[in-house]
Image (tube, rainbow, N blue to C red; front, side, top):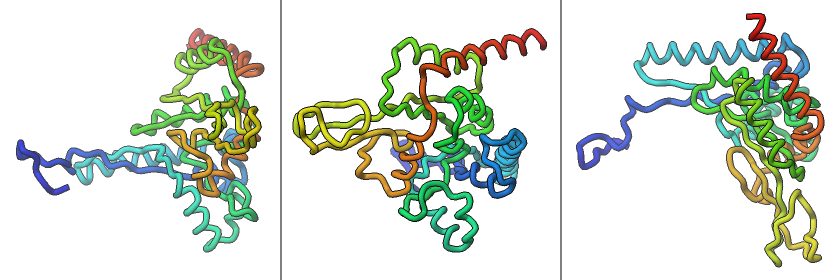
Length: 260
């Protein structure tokens, strides 16, 4: 910062940099305003879209005002999801009505970026379809996670999901995120999160995706542990209903194209 390289150009050119504006807790924001979460009501979902659209327009205004580049991003917020919820609970006790997780066990958090609640009782395809509608407004990085836990979908199911998502939604990125247990004694890798290995050892550790990367669950803060528990309550299955939902989305888009 502030120094020039051998070609006499700055290492970091602040005038050419892109300034990222992250977002956190849209789900709780609309719940506070309407009493409904993003997945619970169509008008509430539209309000969420309006809020992010407004933020996108603000970025454009700042670009003109300051002659710099600004963009929205789904920032990881591993710590911010906990810290901001904690501050709000201290200053605004009514926040307990919308904060996610378990307050009593210190495992509370705000839902990341524009994501639906981790434990929302909706199918994976509906989650992808609706969340992806925000992606064109978030220019610096948006992603949807399929937290499939210990499910081991076949390759055809994964391929089918990705193709249908690519052809029929606005999804910028999607991850298929399983969970694993690793035995520190025999080095065996087991699907899902287990308390012991089949070799009999309890010297194991679990790994799964915290946000954009995999890490040991033992290194997570309490709020992320709370989110993990909520993921297990959600419906992220690739098989069964989602295979038929993929077909429904494709049919809906074909009908829309014909109507147009």
